[in-house]
Image (cartoon, rainbow, N blue to C red; front, side):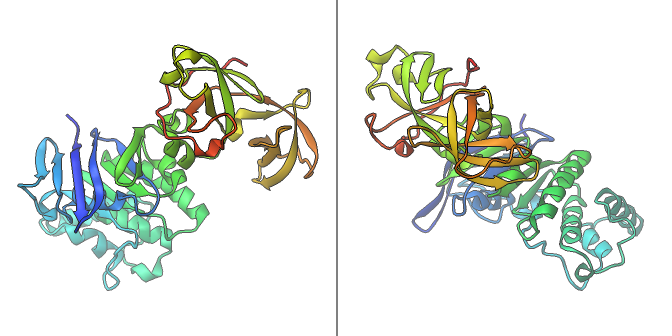
Length: 377
């Protein structure tokens, strides 16, 4: 039985529907994430799970018991849910130890002391119990907030944009540490963020949200390599779309060559079944374009971004279309230089076009991609 289940949950502020018939479940010990742009409804979902908001429709269950529905609303304090807020929400007049112990009102003094010491060690702040929040760095304050949320041993931990106030380097490092802490505690957790790097670093499963709905729920790997629709493909990672022509149910030709994979269902019986003249949009990620000096296919460097170990090159093809390529940084090519490239596509992602062959491919309609297949090299 899943620890958390949301079934057709909707929530509205007045007449504005923010969450629209949303469903997902999370198994015990898993870390889930709701990932999406600002205003997509992800924080509202978190607040309905916590009990801060009533659901307009649907049902939320914890350990098989209904905690929210149109007829029932269990108050937050009775749900055994811990929450880590974006601004930490630590009590400035309390020491670190007292902040962590705040939710342990039913414990004896010895129990409180032991639990606080255990959590301080878990979050790497042993010996800091006597300090106050203003004496700590942002990353340390976030660890205290996490320890406070874990102190009562909640069934479920909710994290609302927990790293947004931290600098990039600290955010990446702390996100990995937080995942280890949550896994060590054996807690089921849900993270809400707009940052896919955080989501990928922490979560076992991710739901991509848009306009109050989950567009796709899956592992980070599947979201990147097997996006269910155009929104997910655009939102997760980087990439460009090239015009392609379906050759048969398992092959599509693009400017750089022929790829093998599963084609959208309207072309699955061949071109006679395709009402879009068999022209599709094919997603190419930066890791799909391999720099190869021996290749006869040439592309012009029009922009580059140094990333330490790699350059991210923007390359112009003979047709004028542009693609991205990640290249080891010892290949330092000048703007305007032509370099050899080849396809290295392991997952073919294809979407139906809404326009005729001369149309703009960046207006391809969202269309569920068939399960990816290995491309021929």
